Image (cartoon, rainbow, N blue to C red; front, side):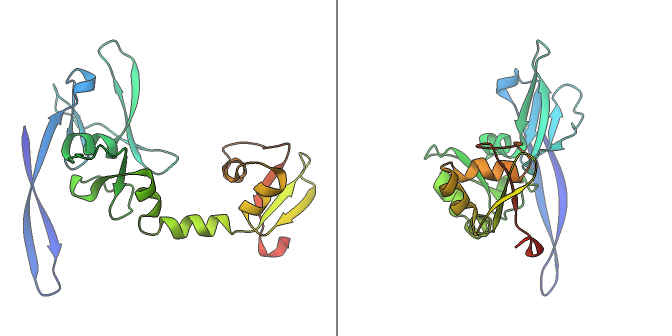
Length: 190
């Protein structure tokens, strides 16, 4: 099934109307009960009703779909769009948003990449560098100050753990790691 739509794109000199065609494909891993469009929409294949999506904790759109047996499964919209509308001849494992907007799931905005390509894309390297070099404070379980570190990397080296473990505590995904609480240092904490 196809649906057509219009999108207005503002050109520096004039307004141009671009004719865009929305294409739908059945999601095979769910017995063709649902369809995904190249615009990143999901609908019930029988009723054609567009389903609601949610934003995950990591900022990606996702949808909860049911199998014929009633079992719920979560799917990331960008991965579904890429699987059905973006060729992947090199069998790359990750999907990248070209404009770095995790909510823009147009097929034309998605590309298959390796983990390394995804990590090095756009401002990703800069964002990671800023996080790794933010000052960190080590606290006891009772929130007593223990140590100050100039970076996440230095803190991880000092307690002999992976920096991702400390990052998870700082961002609320874990309460402690290696027996300590952690937080980013603020200017008034130094």
